[in-house]
View 1 (cartoon, rainbow, N blue to C red):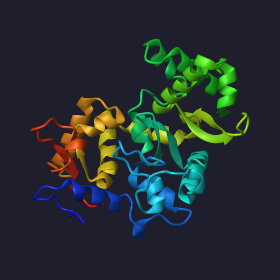
View 2: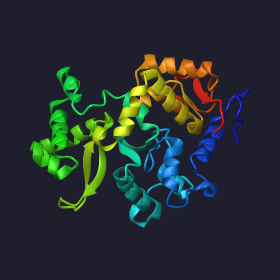
View 3: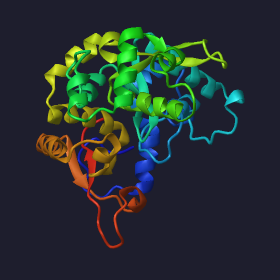
View 4: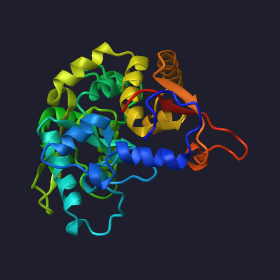
Length: 302
């Protein structure tokens, strides 16, 4: 186990991976149990992918249920994969988590306690019509505007209903619809709030506007500046990720560098973070040969 105080030596990459697995419940003795285990886990880590994302330094709900790292072979015969598949539908519908495509077009859960910080970093102001300013400034595509207006008019609505409302059902138009949904989700304008059986596969997502579905979290976002929101996310994420290269988080979440550096400086000054190096972590650090990457490590307990 890592010390809870600022270490005096360097943390090896092998030790870092082992510690992440402990903190992400990826051990048989730490795997999640009970109906409340998954929600407790999401609240603990703040952000989690549903299954596995080897290219992302994020905890996996699937691996936490299994208590180990595993390759996906056939989800039909994997009880934990089936549970995660159901939870991604039920937890957002019950207003217990946010769920959608967040990083690198991959879906993730966000705890409701951390969602206000993420929402504060989005291009939204907390009103249903704040998209108009973004569209006027050329920062929202026409497809995304049309789909969002359909959600406002029809929602909560299934993808089948929305596709018909914007006449984006086939061919290139269908692909454009999917891109618009992904864009609106990653910008926290809409979110998955349930499922419907009104397509040929008897399964599709239902979407609604985030301010309508989770108004308390949207209201709570008003307390944050960009820098303080990043501090909140870092302070939830790093106690469980242990350490990451300094430039990793802006790339992971698409953050602007200036408020990120202010957030890091504040956390360093408060002795909640420290800078270190991680021998063996060159691939994750992605530094050039001969360079020494600076990593940010959590200094407190986890």
